[in-house]
Image 1 (cartoon, rainbow, N blue to C red):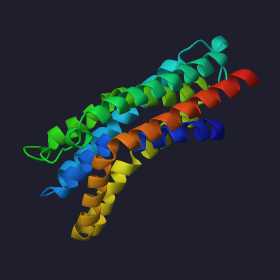
Image 2: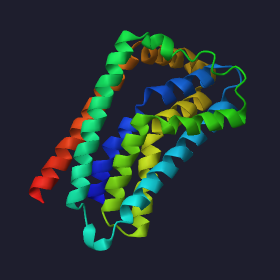
Image 3: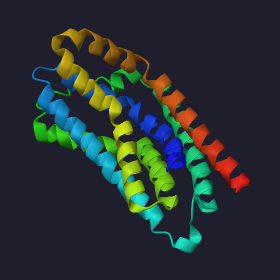
Length: 224
């Protein structure tokens, strides 16, 4: 279980550093009457992550027993492929972002206008269907499901993975709930920074996680 956690937590952290969900919840927190919509948005984000990771975990676990065992060779090959895809995707998106107006594409200041509670929840769910998020949840679910752990251990890791992946968004909501108006200037500065440097943040996180997947997959494939 510890080995699986060691491998999956960095992937969950990469999801936690996703710029769009963080900027979206910051906009909701900085709008009038922030808590209800931001909490529902966080619920949608968390719930979508949990469903995706659980689904990919179940899919990997359904491979016949004789073909898997703890981290079978096919899982390492898929890890390497996912790492390459993530790096290529990150570089392509980064190049497009440099050509486009990244700040304008992330300007979600009008997001809160007309955003009801159910819409905020649905918007949080929709954040999970972005290509980068799908790739990362596939990698996480693959590692968990292919490890051939028992049901309790597998369920525990899925929950821990989801909690870590949603921690930044949920943490901002908690900070706002505790700090109230005192933290609003700081939250706004974080939002502005992320909007202005979104392309760099996305590229650094994407390349690092992709390289991590390739390195781990290669080492385990060779040593296995």
